[in-house]
Image (cartoon, rainbow, N blue to C red; front, top):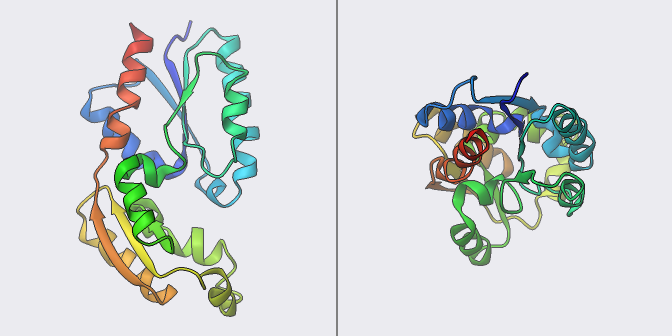
Amino acid sequence: MDMRTLVVACGALASELRAVLAADRIGPDLVEVRYLPAHLHNRPERIVPAVEPLLDEAEAAGRRAFVAYADCGTGGRLDAMLARHPGVERLPGAHCYEVFAGAELFAALHDEEPGTFFLTDFLARHFEALVWQGLGLDRHPELRSMYFANYRRVVLLSQSTEPAVLGAADDAARRLGLELEHRHVGRQGLADVVPIVVRRSAA
């Protein structure tokens, strides 16, 4: 019988989640991670319908589960669904930016400039597919001024120190016509939650 903890995760967290689990020496004997498509970032109404069948499957098999999503634009629908699955937790906060930055820093950045467009390493690397093409700006660049009229800056909340990530974020900011700021926040927001949940479930 498979009694590993099932982690249902956003595909945008794949690299960071793998790094956190490896650093804590949590291998496939303790956890199974199922990644959902990262493009659900753009269609948050599809997150709950994608997550719940996997939780139903785990529940039927008597397995523990964890959801590696924050609210992520579901408007409370993710929490409402989790209420039907007692014992299943999710990442804290409203979105992955808050998970990585921590609630205090994220709130300070937002209060400092509400017109902030946030990037993580993943979103910086995949800006073309998830943002530029995802919002149709490749076909209708004139929409940029409509979508981003109220934005004043881009803030990269980086997990790594790879120069390629900063370069990608700089390019993204340039294409949006915004100034770039960089805050290195690492992966601690994930490390403070996921390994603890997995080990607790395995105990």
